[in-house]
Length: 364
Ligand code: PEP
Ligand code: MN
Image (tube, rainbow, N blue to C red):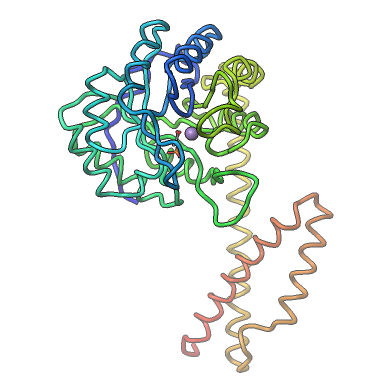
């Protein structure tokens, strides 16, 4: 994919002293008391840089709680006054943006159900023309990287440069461990495409349940994300939305203190050691490729031999034997048999491709 984004570094719009950004707050703003109590308890714990809350809730089915709307914005403004925490809310229509700006909301995010719809995203981008506000874009509910990238391009087209991605996982057709499967490779690919774009993990919406938050958050930090957005509620079980995935502000504090934050900047000694190990890996990879090239050269000869003797490329018995053999050798070497199996499937496919190519060429 060919894409380019001009992104303002995150530290220029929110100072976290080099630590991962923490956005914490309830899934939804429910009542004035709930917002203020939750906000003050978050503030007392000291970990949050920004407070989140849903004001309009994109519910999958009608009839569930759809958010308190404008009155909730007034409670959030009061929460910000009491705690000093900047505010982040979800916007899904130009009217939401207008109200968010009217009440001085500091950061906007686009929800997963909105990112999937380019018409919708374009309406938001148009409403943001000339506005200098950070906008975070959640991944679309389906694992389509181009939709996610497209949303950033539309916002960039409207002049927005304070951008960030929120990785909240992807919905599943079947029941799985996670409410939304992380599919980490999607976020890694975003980082590869846009190294300067901050990535924020949303373990709450990946998990769907409290018990998974710790392992997901650790994974997010291990992958060196720029921060996390986590739902926290004064009384999680009584929450009007996403009750089973929310934590009290204090439990969130405990969890965050238990997590290991990996260092982004290593000392010189560590860097040397790292460089030495990476150089070894580079060498081994080169050797692997040389061995593969040698294998393919023999495969080519084999193809010629089969062609000249009019033998078919694929002999199933031979492949079954190779398969069984390699799996046995793999476990002897301490390699994960499934990994070796996948690897040899690919190698075999390439061998067949090569031999088919030879077959269709004329005799030399
Ligand atoms: C939310 O953050 O509360 C929310 C609705 O999330 P998502 O858009 O990721 O489903
Ligand atoms: Mn939620």
